[in-house]
Image (tube, rainbow, N blue to C red):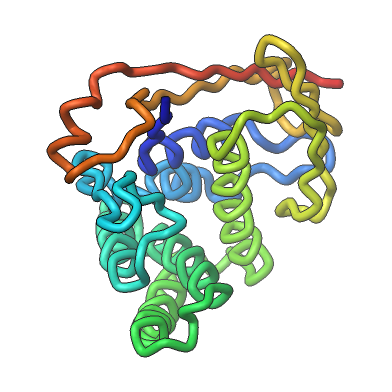
Length: 240
C-alpha cells in the first residue's frame, strides 16, 4: 500500500509543531500572529493538486512533490504566496523567501523558469519587507531572518516525519537558533526530545493520508477511485 500525505496536511503539521515553541535555548516564534499562520498555510497552493493528484505517465504512479517539474512548482508556489495575502504581506515575504531558497538550491536554479521565478519574487519580497518595516520599525533584520529560518525549519521537521517511518535517533543540526535538536523515536509513536524546545510538558501531533494500492494508475481518475481509506498517524514528543 502507498500512503499519500497531502502537502497541505504536511504544512498543517508544521504549524502544529511550531505551536508552543520557545523553551530553553530555542526562541519563540517571531511575531507569532503572522509567522504561525504563515507556517501553517505555506503550502495552501497545493490544495487543488492535493485534491486531484497527477499521475506520472512514465511510472504510472502518483507524482511526488519532490519530482514536480519546475514550472508546475512555480505555479503552485505562486498560489501559496498570493493566498498568504489573507494573512499579511509579511507572510507573503516569508513564504516567498522559503520557496526562493528551495529554488536556489535546486538543479533548475539556473534555468529560464528558475531565474524568472527568482527575479520576480526578489523584487516583490523587497516591497513586502519594506512595508512591514515601515509598520513595525522595532522589528530588526535579525528577527526577520529568524522568522524565515523558523518557517524553513518547521517545514523540514514536518517533512522528516512524513517522508518515511522513523526508527533511529536523528539530530537536526540546523535549527533557527543553531542549537542542535535530537529526537529519538520509541515504540508506539513516542519521540524522546533533547533539549526540550516546547513550553508545554508534552506535544501530541498527527497527520492523515490516503492508503491506496501500490499499483500502476492509468490517470488521476483511476487514483481518485482508490482514495477512500483515510489513515491517521500520531506522534507524541516527550523530554528525554
